[in-house]
Length: 190
Image (cartoon, rainbow, N blue to C red):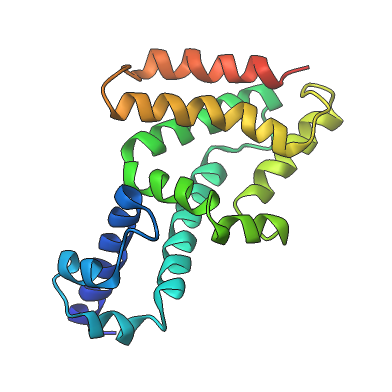
């Protein structure tokens, strides 16, 4: 793909993600995506079969970003607690630095797209974290709860805090991130 085509494709992906993060899936028509991306509506369909394919592509890119953050901060030689603190601190910083990505992913997983994947157990971004939680449960340092509950206890507070930070209600500086992630650890530790 030449550079001009790549730029158009990137503009379509970015515009779609931002609009969905702001307005939801149903509130984001392709005409609005095209306008924000600076392309014609027909151009979208040169790159993507339909809006569903476009949405899935954005999900895959965001998943890769979250998965790489997990991989970069997970050290199998470290104790579970230290890994947890490193991983969730890094994810919190990632969420703050990428507000459209996290809002898109929240929309995605609370929509028929994400619900269908969860029911089919095809949520790839959950798998490394589930394995990590299972490791912690086996070592008896993490509560023996379903991984979905452990995810909620870990991500729920961080997502709310990130939202409040982005809206100017709380300052998630390094100290507050460390304290908050420690509090989520307290919720999941045995």
